Length: 113
Length: 114
Image (cartoon, rainbow over all chains, first blue to last red; front, side, top):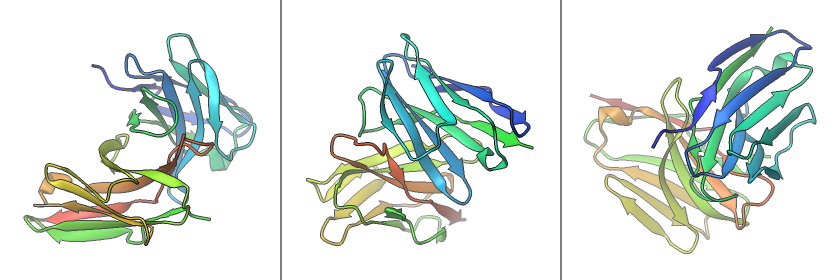
């Protein structure tokens, strides 16, 4: 089975721009979660989608949004980028919603200048 | 407020010896715990998990111990191998998942010395 894939792997943007990141989960997995990893804060939960519905949401501003398509692929969007949004964005998929083992993609490294 | 804490940012262990990584949590609602391993430029890889109804779970060289009364869990790797050098994250989730997804510690960088 192919693993979780994320595109692009690297991205450079400037403040004020917006960005869309993409995640394709493991085949058959219906849950996709997004995390932000920074050196200071570690891995922080952004949100989770299950069967095209946002099930859970972490403590991030409304500039961070996402969606899931009928094929379980998910996108994450960040609008009005700030310098502090520079981070590794990780996507994880699992067969169930919420708790349980999650399988991570390699991440998208976003740099905001 | 950090709900999952890994107090050792790094740990150095000799090859062949036991590596013990520790994790403490504060939220008594957590009832499922996981360990992930992360190499540079890769996403975390699931290693082993334990439910709060157990106090031990083994998988090959990896054993996780859970002490609910102390809100403490540990990962034992025996024997340690060079390929075990990586950052290890402890994670926890609440019953039913809840609004927080997985809550991660900040990681411990394990270095296996030859």
